[in-house]
Image: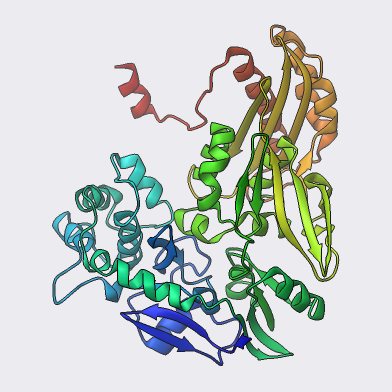
Length: 493
């Protein structure tokens, strides 16, 4: 059975919408159809956070709220969710606790970015853990720019409002909202439009495989954190959209003693704890992966399948030896992840074939893993270079190495010459490490663009090889954050 409309929960009632163009964004729907203009358009690419709204989904017996960028989220992607905007927070004339704290702390001046900031803090307010430090709040607000107020009073407001357990209208209605969202989950395929122009959301892998085989020219959408920019910035005339967010089982995480199986539709927020358990560097990499809004929408499969040369996750997974599983029709195939990337945004993916799962081996007893992201901004920035290293040690000697870089070439790519030079190196003979550092130049001809020059990338890559070796040799991890003069002086005191 096929449904020709999306359904979502809004202000205490079920809403059904049909007949919209597949490129319609959630922001356009709110501002142009609902005329709810509290949600603002700033950058139109998911960077500034002015358009932030919250989506509530039924998970683990309760409604779980996450922030999303409405400017690059397609309207169809809110099917089955509760949509919460800035206009919904006040109740019976009383401001929401987050809003009251923002007023008390003088956290708003011009007010343009305030609605998005408040919505990010609303999701923090309803999060599972209470923020205990300014750093926790900074992570939650990494995707929200404030152009005039300054962040100190905003963080003060967050600590004031979010320190206690949530107690608002949404908390009181949680059980009812959870039941209503479960009612919306009908397991039916969604198809809105006709064979020439449509938004589709299959509910099963079989339905997805059949639909994509029939329309191999359709655009697959996972989190839309990349495709959304094709629409808002590239003005792409996308007429056929297949959203994967309703495919049952495509978001499962399966863990065994030796590997982690990640469904292609698992979001970065969902996979963060599992990857962090493999190694803390993976946890830190995911913490700096975009913003909370991007991590809530963006998926592991989408990050890989779009073939971006600066996708941070692919180099780390390549270094770990990850394998990819793809499906076309009834057939499935597997390949090493590094073989998937052919050229710039070109992958080894057949017409009608989609990424299904990623299998990530866990580290063994004598394995050491390191991953480093180098970018102009520490938070929410594209990597100039991203290096990942896995060393298998035999005592104080490197028996085997797997190295991969992102941001260096047209694709995420292993470094075979560097790996050869690393094999057999002693951690106690740093005088010989220069051979491995020099080998990077034989593996890559670095890109030269606005993010970084080729010379800078080449130097950084060499230095990251040294950093990985020195940290492995000492057993200590050194922070990559640059320390300002004032912070350094305070630390010295």
